[in-house]
Image (cartoon, rainbow, N blue to C red; front, top):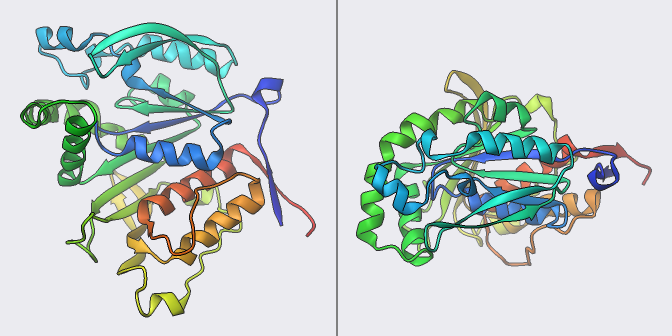
Length: 319
C-alpha cells in the first residue's frame, strides 16, 4: 500500500510545482490541462493561459500584420517575472486577454496553489522559462486533426467564421514552424495525436494517442496496474482498440512510446483510476461501468500520476 503527501505551499512547507503545457492553438492543450486538473484536484491546481501575456490586442496585431505566435507579440519578460514571483509564493496581478472581443480586461490578483499549469503557445520558448518549469509537456496533434479541432473551436465557441479560421490557419503556419514547433525538443513528455488506425471511420471520431517520454526511468511509476478482462476484450464490447510500445528518435532525442488507439476496455482505465484514488485520496475522473474510455483519458491519467510521483512524497505504508 502506498500513500502520497503533497507539499503545502500555503504553509511554507513547499513551493508551487510548475508545469508547462505547450502546443499550437487548437492542439488539445486545454483538454489535457482540464483532465489533469480534475485528477489532481481543482483545489490544488491553478492554470495560467499564456494568451493573457499577449503584447497586442487583436486589432493591433492586424494593423501590425503579426500573429500571436510571433515572439514580438508576447511579453515574455513579464511572464518570467510573474512565474518567478509565484514560485516564491507571492500573489501577482495577472493580465487577462478576452477572446470574445480580442481586447484586454483589467488585471486580476492571482495567488499560487500547490500546482500551477502554464498553458499556451510559448511556455518553453526561452531558457529562463524552461528552467522555472518542474515538468513540461508538448501536445503535438497531426495537422489534419489539429485543423479540424481549431475550426470546430473557433467557429463553434469563439464565433469566428469558417473562412476567417481557415485564413488564420494558413497565415499562422510559418510562425508555428518557427516559434512553437521547436519547443517540442525540450519537453519531458510529448503527446502525439493522430487519426485512429483501428477505427478510422468512427463517428464521433476516436484517436490514436501516444505518450512519448524522454527518460521514463527518472520517475518510475509506482503500483500502476492495467487490467485486461478477456471477457470484454474478445467480443470487443468497447470497440476495436490497440496498445503498443516502442522506442523512437524525435528531435534528436530517444523517447519511449506508449500508444493507445480507440476506445479502451473499461477495466483497463478503471484499474489505473482506482489505484490513483486509493493511493492519493484524490477523486479522479468520474468513470462509470460501461462507459467507453478514450485514449486521451488514459494518457492524461498517466501524466497526472507522473506529476504525483514527481511532486508528492510517495511512501510505502503497512496494509
